[in-house]
Amino acid sequence: KMITLAKKNDLAARRLVLAEVLDETTVKNLFEKIAPKYQDRNGGYVRLTKVGLRQGDATPKAVLELV
Image 1 (spheres, helix red, strand yellow):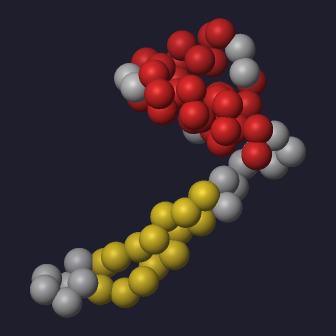
Image 2 (cartoon, helix red, strand yellow):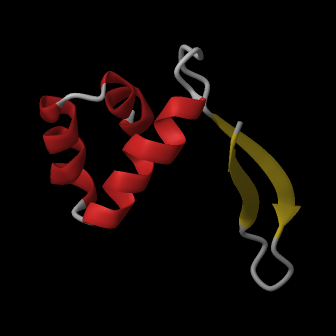
């Protein structure tokens, strides 16, 4: 959702993202570095891969990555 807002690259989108993230550096990176990479992509920015269970308490583990 944040990447989709950042792709708009306007003041309203920046304020909406800033209301959720609260860290100016992260918002700046999102708008200047991450969003331009996904300009031609319509959704599907994240890949979630299940990697099994944790040994100690059998909690499911997963790897979250930007595509």
